Image (cartoon, rainbow, N blue to C red; front, side, top):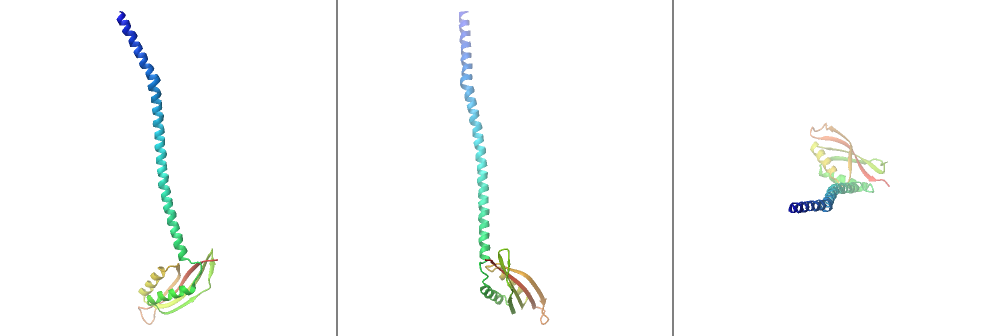
Length: 176
């Protein structure tokens, strides 16, 4: 009986120590582990959000650079002065390359609109349709902005393959 009592006391003491170990060591460590896990999850979420922000910032930076390139291109295409003489010389070269004949070029008075000076240039000539098309392509490829605001085409009475064209071109400069 003494042995059973001793074993019972030993069993209760072991169970008490085990319970004490669970309450004093395991449960607090479990809470600490849960806190660390929640902190880790929060840190992962913050990292994912930061990565998304970095990707968005990179996209915005690329768009900004694209806009700046576009602005620089437009600034090159719209000079600070009209430079009419230079433009008319270039226009004459393009017209000759496009085989336009009987050319007449007449600049009209400049107009200022919203910080931009617009100079209309009226032009009449004869050519074939393919030469006119070539001329328009070359005008569009000039290193300055040129807009065709008017184009009127009439078939020549002398030759069915020849057309007479009247066009108004507009060149631009930044108004001072």
